[in-house]
Amino acid sequence: MASSGIVIQHPNQTQHDKIRRGTFYAFGKAKGACGNITGEVKGGDGKCYPGRTIKDGKHWIIFFDLPRGTDYRLTVKGSVTGTQTATFDVETKNTFADFEMTYPYDTTPICNTFAAYGSSAFTSSVTGLAGVEPGNTWSGPSTSQTWCVHFEDVVNSPCDVVVTDGQHTARQNGVPVASSNCLIP
Image (cartoon, rainbow, N blue to C red; front, side, top):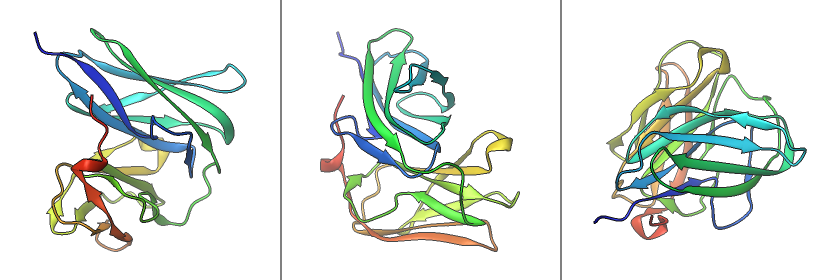
């Protein structure tokens, strides 16, 4: 019988992480038969914030919209498997440039399967590259003014992550990506 499990890659489940903006995408990996993936965040004040699953399956993505705060606890679960948690803080709330990338935001090593996300004041769809490898675009709720581009198994590292809507560009140069940076379910 195959084992199953869920891993949260972002926010990082192995350390207390910091999220730069309250509108963000949690993402990770499911192994085995996990069923439908859902997520919820509980604030330090006890208030619960349900997530919106944008992408289900082996590489899942969940959208959240939170106020600035500390000691948030994200719980992700599959309908037929256990749960996984991560703790984090939200540093700011919905102050952004017209078009910007929120994650990745520096050259901290990350898993080679990841979601780049950010915000836009424009209605154009976006495309993205990690090095020369294209990503799949997933959008948040239309009211959130956010975008998300998912990359799987990026092999060139470090790579420049570039997202554009055709007129505006956001980039993070020199992001070290490797399968050795991935948490394993």
